[in-house]
Length: 430
Image 1 (cartoon, rainbow, N blue to C red):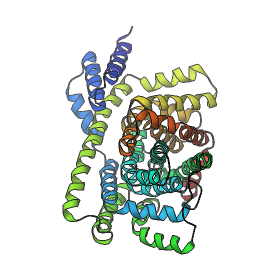
Image 2: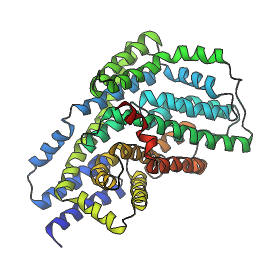
Image 3: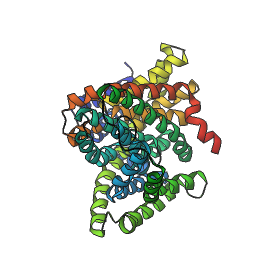
Image 4: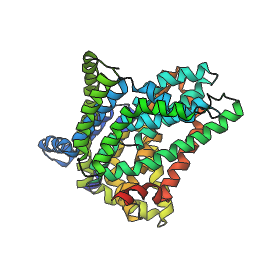
């Protein structure tokens, strides 16, 4: 075995062993990279250089701002208003509260950009509300956790910023635009699944639809929805960079939460900022350690070897696309979202582009694959949060989620093989 092959074995085997031993992912990435560098006889200064290089990015500054914006809006009394708006839109349907849950997640996801925040914030309100109205607790939890993945696709999603950085030069504005239709398609798919189950179980309808009530709720929620408009229009229109628009959105979110909705006082703002620092520390540590891991992969030519191995199995673009999705889904079962994006993008993106998949389309595919991974054991963070919020056993939630997994897989296949779904808006505006 050559020295290069042995170094790859040290890197990947040590990483796999630490993952199975349930090491924190940042430690597993850093320690496996350290062992690989030691085997190659490279200096420790390489570690420091690559960690600093990984987070020394102007576009990466958008991530802390978007997370802060989501925390401020999520704690500022916005959840109740978005639920009321969703109820005015779709509450009249069979299984009305399930539909409200899905549509509210689409609205809230466009503000928080986080499936975990969506599940914790909306789930704590909607799951008890659904159970009180006669919905099963496992069904209510399953709807909540699956619909939370809409927020990963709908801008502003900080995971898209991380992907843009990992992919090297992909437009954040194009990714933002690309997420709208897939997010809506996912919502429609989940609503169809919820409607079928609600019909079978005779779940109740909500109040009748009135245009007057819709306008009333829209007028109340417009301040929250405007935050998304500021970000997307600012970036697409060329008025702001993604980082600048995120900074503006933070100031706007602070004003809306404290002075308009009055869901936060200044003491609460400091608490929210403290929570943001906790989240940011995890994200930035992951990015910096993943930079070392990516450096090892690149210097050992792992991306080109992986591409050759996949293409060596088959030349059929359809089978290669399915294989890429399968790899990402398996990774999602054992790793969190950010490290998958950081580690898998440099390896899998060249394979995707070689079969004609646009980098923007592939970014949406990665995000949705990772979203499904957040709902699957054994490392499904959103699955755990949903089980805790709904007070339902995880095994019971997984069983109730099976029909919704099917809905999400159908959407994933549509996004994979019909690029126009993803590329329509980016092509229209750019």
